[in-house]
Length: 528
Image (cartoon, rainbow, N blue to C red):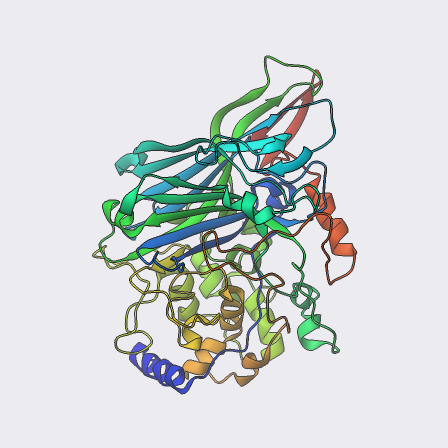
């Protein structure tokens, strides 16, 4: 069907108030190797115009790591790795390369090594809250970070600015004795860099896992979708993640080369190519890290690697850059999975349920995930997410695209434009957006059906039955809800998945791409 006809059909549907029945998910254990290294496993990326009152001139960028954190997994609580780099990338001109990049590097410090305790008394506010380097009172295991902004230029060279040094990370929400007023502690981890209209806000620390989904409805051979009736259960209920959040002024994006209000965003994590670990009970002069850093995790749009990439490509996707997606053959895996992957790909498998899901020529997924949506696609006057700055159009690459010209919605819909709300995915992504719902239903053919390009009404009935998150989102930065407390929390899906989470949490410092050689009691890890 021609684009203009699709546009008119979509516009009519939106005016009529027709919305998608949805399912959801997120990119957690999306590839074999990264599943062995949870500390650098990127689970979700967000990019949206700040919805906090008075902050409409700012954009919030967020990346979550460490999937399915069991809140009671003490005394060694989850934390970011001090042997990794965590980065948020921003493409301002549509060439699939970052023009701005924010790098977080972490430091750990134990105050008293003669106790097993994470904190030696109730954790208190820092003695000098305005000083980002002032640490929490009574916190025995402390983490801090350096934040550097890179303004990238040609030939990969960039100008760097150190924004924060040794800034405190929010502590774990241990329990009613250790953290009786946790949100006050979390607020103390919000740091302001600069002043006035150019000020940036930064938060790093644990948050509630904001995704809600019955994952096994899909991974159990779609048993929750086509099998006997069962009670829907939120897989992530009761679990936490670790969040990196930035709020930057729109003017900074313009200074970095943006002229149309559309940016591409993705996050990554990297490990040093060579790491030598000494004996844990004594100092070792050889202990350290050397060589270039190797990217081991990458995420833009949720679910792309998890559901659309075949096993043979998942690790490559995590190690690659968006600018190389065409060279690596990723677009065909998304738009033509029936021929590029065969019947075991997710979209052909969805066709076994619907009987009408197309597995080739998926121009809808090409625009949403790889190029951005041109303006007026959903009707005259509707916004787009396709960068207009390059004469030949944007480089085909998988990343989350944000149109920050669109103001926050007065009444946000988690279904974004399918609920009449163009401030949501795929025009950006807010914490409450059902991104997984929209992508999964689009994969089944629901979008094409509503546009009149195919007839596939059954695609509208697929649902996992989970309709809301277990914790309320915040109405202010950093937006994700309070992390679950270690002492008192619950999961609504039995003990098996909890045990799996605890197991993954014990893989501390595991390296995602490489091998481990044992040489004279030293462990040398090589990342290729």
